[in-house]
Amino acid sequence: MTTVRDVITAAVLPAGAAFCLLGAVGLLRFPDVASRLHPAAKAQTLGLLLILLGTAVQMPLRHAPVLLLIAVFQMFTAPITSQIIGRTAYRTGALDRRLMFRDELADRLARDGTPVDGPDRPDDPHGPHGPPPEEADR
Amino acid sequence: MNVLYGTVLATVAAAGLLTLVRLVHGPRALDRILALDVLVTMVIAGTATGMLLRKDTTSLPVLVVLALLAFTGSVTAAHLIEKREGMR
Image (cartoon, rainbow over all chains, first blue to last red; front, side, top):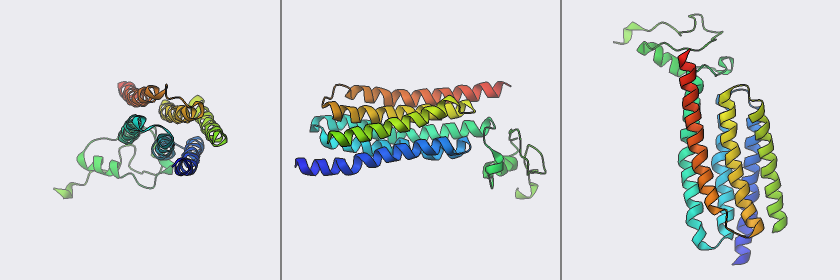
């Protein structure tokens, strides 16, 4: 039984550490906030989950619910944090628009008549507020 | 097994140091919030591995508190930034 536990831990714990390291490298090398959200989420969910799994296997059974609680909580909160940071980045104009192929939210907002405030949209001939709203829809 | 735990702990520590670099010179405050969030996650991972290495479970509640604090801190800071930028 101990051997089985040790094998599971030896497989899972380095994988989690590798995910943490790769997430940190991605966080360091990616160009702007929106793309840095991806490696951050990998390190936060999969990296931490694998390490908690490897830890829980080695511990007495009565400590497993606490680690499960942390894992579930992390799975719930990591997407919320990513979404809020991404939304703040969009609203404060922190995104690098030269890296974007398409901004579907801007099209949608322009259609609804809500102005989009971003500092620079270099490839957009209509200025900072996106293309003019299309009246044909309604 | 102690060698494995030590290696994992060193890897997580290296990841934490790389995150700390992003935290120190992330160009915007949002980068710093994101880096701080990831750093707390790595502290959780390192504490869990350290529990295995030291073979005691005293710091188990610390993990729960850290997970709670990371979430509330990041969300509150992001909201504050949104409010501050909205003022201008």
